[in-house]
Amino acid sequence: MSTLFWIMLSCIGGSVLSVVAAGGYLLLPAKVRDHTVTYLVSFAIGMLLGAGFLHLLPEALEQRGDDIRGLMGTALLAILLFFLLEKGLIWRHHHHQEHGAHEACEEAPAGALILVGDSFHNFLDGVLIATAYSADFHLGVVTSLAIIAHEIPQELGDFAILLHSGYAPARAFLFNMMTSLTMIAGAILAWFAMEAVAGLVPYFLAFTAASFIYIAVSDLMPTLNRKIGLRDTVLQVGLIALGLALNVIVHN
Image 1 (cartoon, one colour):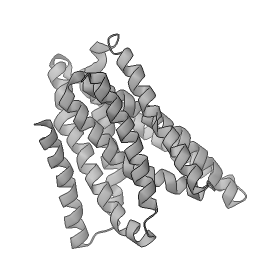
Image 2 (cartoon, one colour; image 1 turned 120 degrees about the vertical axis):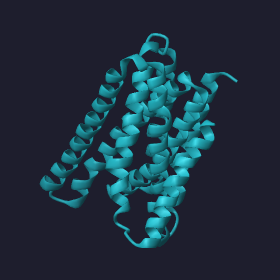
Image 3 (cartoon, rainbow, N blue to C red; image 1 turned 90 degrees about the vertical axis):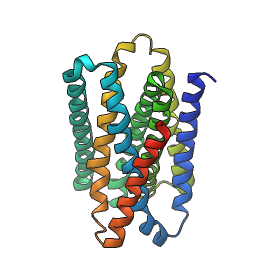
């Protein structure tokens, strides 16, 4: 089967699976969700860190070992860009909260903002999947699994924001499904432009690795500190280790 087939399968499967899984998860009792969401996040952290440190960065260095400074500079730039993007989203949401007269007015912009941001994010995910598969098949599989792992808890958060912004559950599900499909557009664009930017693939890989590491360390890890009991900590560490182990198994 062609590489493009696997790219499309990963994008379609990943986008649909993450939205359906998140939508189904929201149907569970709130008490169950509250007790299990941190475990989903823990697994996602392991997948993201494993993909970033064990596969993406080593592959980038293997392809362009003669430009380590350039690759590390790209990773640094990615971290700063993600910080600024996140800061802008937080500022925008806080600004509307301060100046809105009613809760519905405050939260409605948050729903629209999360849809725009999620569309852009998923588009980039498609680019990253295509880039990874073009470098190495196993790298594409690992990258796809890491994206799916962190998409599920992210989609849960997106659903919650949309519902809180006044969207009906069915409408929230439809909009989330539409934004998730932008992953396919990103993958197709990247695939057909790959020949023109083939020399930039190692830098795309470094950028991807840094984005995964930033999401895991800045966004996801702090949420685990809400549960500090010994049992919770052991489970969190175990699931992070499971995500790391799955990275190793898939790539070998």
